[in-house]
Every structure is written in structure tokens, then in C-alpha cells.
Length: 288
Image (cartoon, rainbow, N blue to C red; front, side):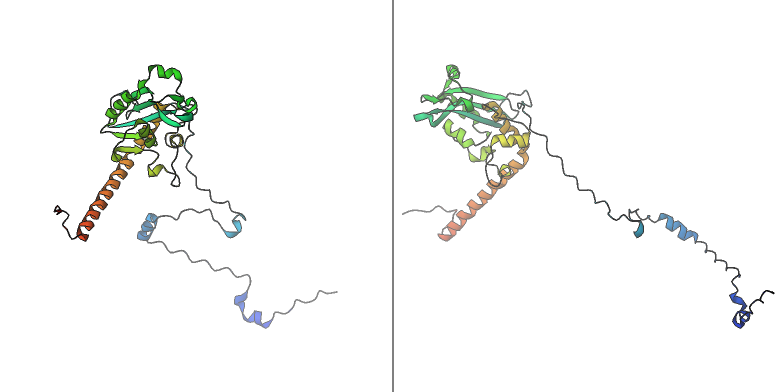
């Protein structure tokens, strides 16, 4: 049987020879050469920073979270060491720190009396340290806190002698300490308020408006431990002095501002009082 004849070409295909599937593709136009000025400018432009993001299909389903900000490392833990002087200078300095240890006198030993007093200079060196024989009979030595024992009274000085010595040493000087009203009370002394630097009263050291212990402040500010067992007045006085030294610049500035404000307020009060009375505050009033 003879093979069937090839199908006849359609009129559209024969009429339009341009639709021949075997035609050659058109060559792509060549890219125009860059202007040399533009190429030089492009080389000077900053390149965009590389990012971690790619095409959407290549991105991970769960991108890794951003690293958390690093927090400052906490201060070194307080170590149980004695605070040492920072110099060999044992002379009296403009600022001195005081600490007293008390014993119990009176009924049941409920009344506090001076049993030992210590003064240190700005370097932490001892300039005065004496056991004291109170005027009244000692009922309770309070050894677990004061560290004072009956044997210490053998070489103790009379209270009035020690009081006079301390008064001369602190006169005209800045007095540093913690809860100084207790120390001054048992010494039966006073000191100008402008010359007192009390670590228990300084506003920057308070926590929610409350007074903090010297032990707590020493651990935070000096990274040292004190008062683990019996109290040592030398160590406590040094701690107060070193805390003051560390914040001295800001503390003194704060004190100056406080007294300047009080002086200005007092002056304004006197001026208003004189105006209210109709008198010149600069002219003395004559009482008839």
C-alpha cells in the first residue's frame, strides 16, 4: 500500500514566511560604553552595606534573634580584708574621722558611755586612739560589739582628759564619721554643722530616704567587709574617711550649694521682715 501524501500547507503559513520557526534570533544590542566621568564618579560613591537578607525564598523560616545588649558586669564581691592606710603620713590633716565604742553604765547598763575613741587622718593613719574610763561605774562592757574588756581599763585615761584632747584635735577641722551625733553625744562635745561630713546623712548614700549602715556602705563603695564580729574603731573610722574621700568632690560641692541657698533664703527673710515692719533693716531700731 502506498504511503499517504503529505498534508498540504495552509494558506496562512505559505502567505507569511516570517513565522518560520527556524529563523535566527535577533542579536542583542551592545551596551553603550560608560562615560569615563561617570565611571570615575561611581567608583567614589560609597557601596551599600552588606545585609544578611537575601531573596525571600532563601531566607530562613525563623531568623535568629538579635543579640541581647550586654549588661555591665557587677562590681567585685566584697572581700574580707582590713582597710589599710594609703600613706605613711601620720600628721593631722584638714579632715579627720572619728569613731567611738561605748560601754553600758547606769541601771542594767542601759546608758551609753565612752569606752574608746579613735581619730584617723585623711590617709587612714591613726592620730589618736585611747581607752576611756567613764565617770560612772561600768555595768556592761558590751564586748561582743565594742571589743572592750576589763583589762583595757588598766591603762585607760579619765574621760575629762580624753574629752579635752579630742576637742583640741577636731577644732577647726572637717569631722568625718558615721552617725556622728552618737559619737559627739558620748564625748559631750559639739561641732559646727558646716564642718560635719556624716556618711549616714549624705543624701547620695541613702536608700529610699533611709539611713544605711556603715557596714553596708563600706561593702558597696569600698568593696570591703567590716564589723564581722567585734567592732574596731580604727577600721570603722578608716572606712568613713575612705568613703568621704571617694565622693569628696561632689560632697563638698553639695555642701557649698546648701549653705549658699540657706544664706540667701535667710537674707531674703530678713529683708521681708524689715519691709513688713516699715523699718529699714540696715538702720537699728530705737526702743523707747
